[in-house]
Length: 333
Image (cartoon, rainbow, N blue to C red; front, side, top):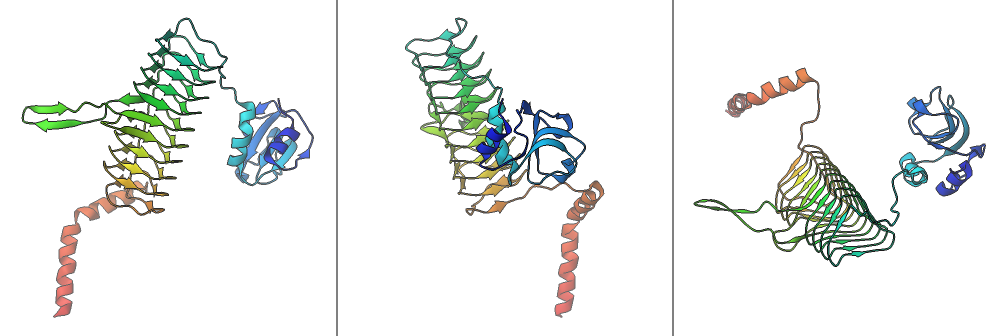
């Protein structure tokens, strides 16, 4: 358990008060004199107790033993919370209840837990953690420090980089949605490509990434995929993208770097999304985009009676247009 001085040193700032031992992290409402709390909103300056407050301002009502002022609380959380991280670390054990194929290479320190299935010719790096009920197909490569949570499916011939996190229920390597419309029905186009996931990618629960028809589907370094994201076949996602839940990206789309797609965004197939584009929630993307631009076409939340009035006016737009057109013609005579 760290002392206040260690946390202050980690953040590169000084602290005020007692160099207490901090036993954990808490919300202000559930804190006690041994816990750390983060505060950036003055509404949280209440009748609470804390061992250490890390905040953008010094609270007047919270009773604390030590205080650290830091200008960016979210950055402070990213730096400090690893000190209290309870997530499992690999212990180097290979369960005798796991199924391990032929010619498998497993790096030092990696752990494979009960009922995981590892196919033939799989290469697993160092300090990898594979949870129960994970399926890893033949000829897969997994880089150092990667964590794969329960019930993840990783199909054949997929490459996963270093320090990748894949959450429960994710599916990598289902067939791309490729069919040819013949006179007798839809003919399936075999999906024989692969997937490459670069370093430091995080893939959310129940997210799906389709394998390429030919070639590869690629997720760039540092990109973060939320839960319930769909990546179509042959999509190329650039570096450090942020793609939020329930977003779908059509096949063969190419995305630049530092792109943000908010929740329930739909991107048509064969699109080019340049660097720095931000797309707000519920927006459909189907045309040419400019780099560094914010796009929005979704319906923002609004009071219900106002929304119903707007809808009623939309229904009457052709009639209103004709009336305005007639008035303009009268004025021009």
